[in-house]
Image 1 (tube, rainbow, N blue to C red):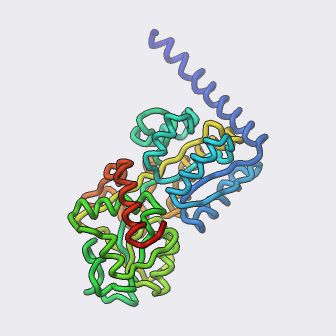
Image 2 (spheres, rainbow, N blue to C red; image 1 turned 30 degrees about the vertical axis):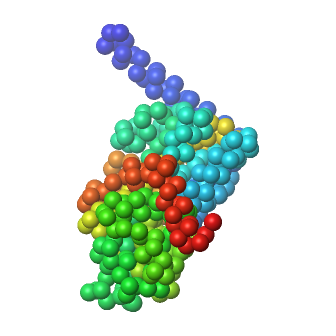
Length: 338
């Protein structure tokens, strides 16, 4: 093709793409609803949904929230039974997500906003699975209950008997993110951390929001946490200390996809693309509390950027399916929970 031909083609192609997207938006308004499956901070997710409803008032948005592991299981079960309810899913993945990509879970498409993201956001360049945010594992404590000199700084500090009955966390069988940090503790040579935390009378909570509130109330004084709700809490003045240990931490890459068999696939694409827009990413960061991946989005106000943390690793790299099962089975057995 000549340069002249290319120059003539470019505006036409751009116009066609714009017209295609206009048609998708029109079809989405006609569908009139969208269902999001997610594992975002509940309060933040509702605020996020309200902003989407303002942007697209003709599309009624509904949400279902579960921990990452049960959320993936729910979608898998529904897909296998032909009962397709979700239009868009956001979660921290395990191997089932990548197997689901091969099994036909995900629509193949290119969001118009994708051009504003680093190429690695588009998983394996397959135009189906998009990394829109990142969570990190951390230690938090109540600054009114824990003296600065006693505040934990390393993962090994969580197993100190002085925290007996005063330590909390999310159970590994609920969250892939916690399975990743447990695998990392093993990599650090910290031994049988399930047995150590059982000896410390660890208290389990359902989700990072529950852990955070327990620490703020003083029900527990320290906790391991996936840092979803921390920035918002610190911005609101919560008396919380936080540390990302120098020995390193695990990352959880938050992925999003539009379901191939979505009942409202056009509305699903509109929601997914909005979440990748400049405003959507800012709202996602401010309300859901996690660093996002779009180029040019400002850093969070109260917790550090991922790039500034030492020794980070994607938790999934430590979790082949056999290791994931081993961790869940061992923790359930240790705590007598089946």
